[in-house]
Every structure is written in C-alpha cells, then in structure tokens.
Amino acid sequence: MPTKRSLLILLTLFLPLSLLRAEAESGYVQYIDLQPPFITNYGGVGPLKYLKAEVSIRVESSDAEAKIKHNQAHIRNNLVMLFSRQTEETVSSPAGREKLRLEAMESIRQIMVSEYGEEGFSMLGDLLFTSFVIQN
Image (cartoon, rainbow, N blue to C red):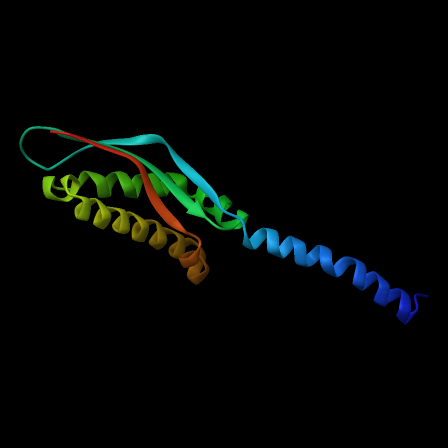
C-alpha cells in the first residue's frame, strides 16, 4: 500500500506535466484555410460581377479546430450566400470589406452556437481574408 510520502512524490512528478500540457494548449493557434477559394457573382441584376475570396479561420484549441472542420460544409454554404448578397459599395471599399469580414465571423459564430451552445461562441478566434479579388 502506498504511503503518503510516495503519493506526494508521484503528485510532485506528474503535476508539472499536466501544467505543461495546459500551457501548451493555451498557446495553441491554428489557421484553417477554407479550400477551395470562394468564387461567386455579386451585385444583383445587371452585368455579372465576380468575387474571389480566400478565407482563413484562426482557432485557439484543437477542439475548436476539429469542430470548425466538422462543420465546414455548413460554414462554406453560409459564406457563399453572404458573399453573393454583396453590393459594389461593400466589396470595393476597405470599410466595406471589414464589415463583410465581421459579418462572415458572425455567420460562423451563429453556426457554432447552434451546434455547440454557448461554448461555440468562443471557438472562432478570427477570420482573415488572405486574398480578396473583385472583377466588374
């Protein structure tokens, strides 16, 4: 039967390992590229206008990474719909693109909250346009 001293020694040995694991997880940052790039028309009636956007999602835990990847089809669908509703004013100005980026983040957050409850709200660290090209 283990003595108190041997239990204390075991705890002393394994406690730093668990702290290191927690520290490693808190420093976790991963970028998920949504591939292939988004290519859609936008602007409604009139001459066709195209938008091509490459999107990366930043997550800060391996759990969030797995859950984002699991819901990637739903995320892509919502982003395609969001991008196709845009106007010339939205996509041609830096302020409009920033507003679109925030709307895209909110769209993904809504998906994650609907799937995972309040835990889903904090899964998304950030959304980045790594490329954003429009053709009039």
